[in-house]
Image (cartoon, rainbow, N blue to C red):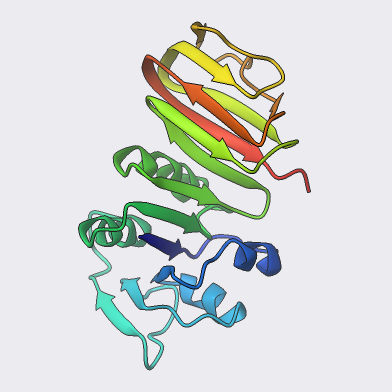
Length: 201
């Protein structure tokens, strides 16, 4: 089962974002994400947050939290999806001008296996063991270590392959590879990394 979280970040290409949705998706808006859902003609299943960014829409089930809280509206939405059994979570509208929120939304995925983030230009994953990417042939892919080095990296289906190698934190060696197969595979033995796939537009 897949849940889709729509946040209050930047979405410019509604047609592309809407093309990533499935009719079976469970749609959760995190506060101001409601405005994006309305722009795409989507009625969310629920909305979560303190609603300091958007008013409460009639007809939408609301889970309201106080403004003074320990977690962002986005993390509350992701936690709801996980607690209700969704094993795949796609995050939309979670990047933009607020760099603090953008970084938090990316790193949140580390705690929620099966989650990934999509914006107008990129698809972003966290890797801690193994990741299989399907249907992105020809796109640019970067592997960025976080928290420290990524060791024992082996890749398949990329132009420049890695075979049990190390990418060091704070260096750019993993940037701008090319996906050459319909399916590519990345595995690591230790460390945490961010995988960014650029859609090339």
